[in-house]
View 1: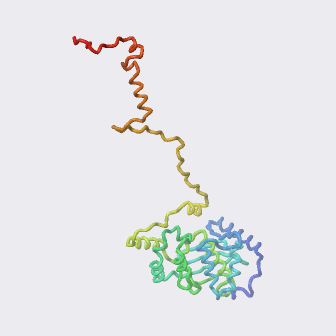
View 2: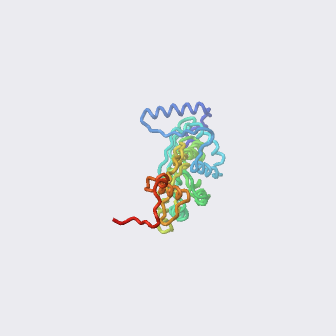
Length: 304
C-alpha cells in the first residue's frame, strides 16, 4: 500500500527543535535495544569539507530533475535528522526523523566494468599512493577524469533507485535527499566508502600504477610524506630536525715539516751560530785567548 493510500493528507509540519529531540530520543531507545547506529552529525552550515564529500554534493547539484527537493533534504541532513546511515556495496540505508521515523533505501548501480578499466588505463600511473587518492591530492587531469559529467566516477540520477517509507509519493522525497547529502558528509570521514558504493576496488588503481612503473623508466617518487604532509594528516606540528652545530674549538695547527736542503730563516741561522760559538760547545773564551802565549812561527809542536 502506497503512502498516499495510508494517509488522507500529509503529516503536519514538525519544528526543527522538536524533530531533533525526537531523533535523539529514538536513537537512545534503539541503542538500548542493541541496535548499533551510525548517525550523521554536521557541524556548521557546510555539509562536507574534503574532496570526496564536496564532489559528491556538487554532483547532486547537477540533478536538475530534483532541484526542488534537494534543498529541503540538505536542511534535514544539516539539522541532525539522520539518526542512522549505513553504506554497503552499491547500497545506502538510513533512518531519518520527520513527522515520524522513516526508513530509506537507495540502490546505486556499480561503475560499469569497461568504464572502470578505461579509468585505470588513463589515470593509474598518475596516482602515487592510496593516501593521495583518499585525500584528493591528485594531478589536475586525474581530478577532471574523476569529476567529469557524464563519464566520471560519480553516479548520475538514472543510476539510482530510491525508496522511502514516508507518505510522499514523489520519486525523491526530502528524506531521500537528506540521505544523499548524508552520504557526502560520511565521505568526509570515510572516503574509501565511495569505492564501496560504486562496487570498485581502489587498490586496483595502485596495483595498476605499480605494473605500469615496472615497465616505465624509474623517476622520483611523489608518494613519500614530507613534514607538511604528516602535519596535515595527523593534525600536529612537526618540528624540523635541528641543523648540526658547528664546532667552536679552533682547529689545532700542525707545525710545517722541514724539507731537506731548504735553507733555514735568517733569524734561526743567527741563533744557531751563536750557540756554536758559546764556551759550552768547546770554543775558547776571550780571557783564555788573551793569556795564552803566542806561538812561534818557527816552532812546531812535536808529535809524541
